[in-house]
Length: 165
Image 1 (cartoon, helix red, strand yellow):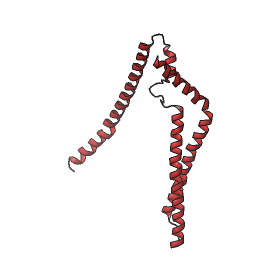
Image 2 (cartoon, helix red, strand yellow; image 1 turned 30 degrees about the vertical axis):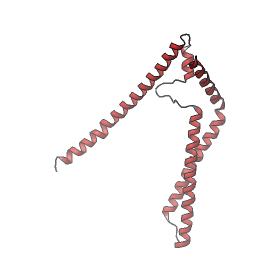
Image 3 (tube, helix red, strand yellow; image 1 turned 60 degrees about the vertical axis):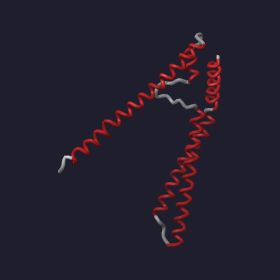
Image 4 (tube, one colour; image 1 turned 90 degrees about the vertical axis):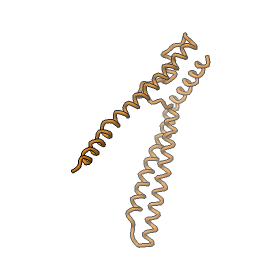
């Protein structure tokens, strides 16, 4: 047993188990700190333009949240669900149709079903179900969050007018 049989696994363990997670946490922390610094710069520049501004109201209008907050608008999140629902739904429908059709053709040509085509058809149905779930979430969320989206649009409009002053 050579020394390389010990050094290589130990090096991989140290790199994958220790260095990589530390680098990931470091990068995420730097990104959050950068975002917070940019938000603070924006607030300070707004205060320079108009020193009589209500800071709490400005922060609410900016929709500034904590470091773990979601910065996307409600409309963007809903449209993202529509996108994913459409993609999963179409991929699932295509896989299901192709899998079951190819299985039917295999039955007619060779007299037996092929498990690979059944598996593809079943996975297609799973993807179709996921897509339909995203689409249902989009349509229900659109109806339930209509007032919140309107208020969010008004806040953005008011914030834009504030920065023009």
